[in-house]
Amino acid sequence: MMEQLRKLVVRYGDCEQKPVRFRPETWRSRLESHGAAHVLDIGVGCASGSSGDRLISRGDLAHLRDRVGDDPDSLRDLFVAVMIWGSGTTNGRGPRYTEAALSDARMPTVLRTTRDAVRDGDLSRAYQQFVLNGVGRSFFTKWFAVVDDRDATCDRALILDDRVFRSLNALGWSSWKAAGTRRWPTRYATYVSSMHGWASSLGVTADWLEWLLFHLNGHVDEP
View: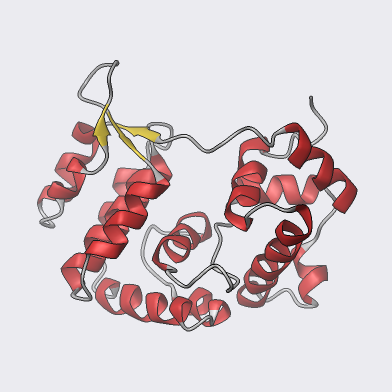
């Protein structure tokens, strides 16, 4: 597997993750009643395009994370931004699922406790604690990756969505075999530590390697 990963890193080494386009008006009605419509000002306006589309990057999320406080509204705003970034214009269910999460009374506690668990380095506990209506692994691991502000010496949280999984499976890696259990919290933590180990051996960052696997979406053998 490492040799396959090495070849992919060489082949795509000059590529980088681009900002995600989103359409504020698609989201506005879902956010206004929860006092979160101002989050739609994040990022920059598209130089070209229609309907007032904007671009949001992973860097924009990091800047917002560093600015927001610990109060429930600030964490909610950061979560909404993560959902917007994760949905873009391709996931039409994103606004509906975000509204479902915003309507869940557990949100303030879940966002605070999972952020704290991530920053404590307990990714398995964070995974186990994240339960919100409308939000599955592909999105709540995005939340983990964004709120993790530990320094680069730590195995910082990474995103694990279906596209990354397809690439890992195509490379012959099994999360439950690597973890020795079918419990998802342990499998997620094992995935993160494995990715950091591979990235270190390959001379790249773990979040870039995660993005590459997302980009490939299982097509690891195609030029």
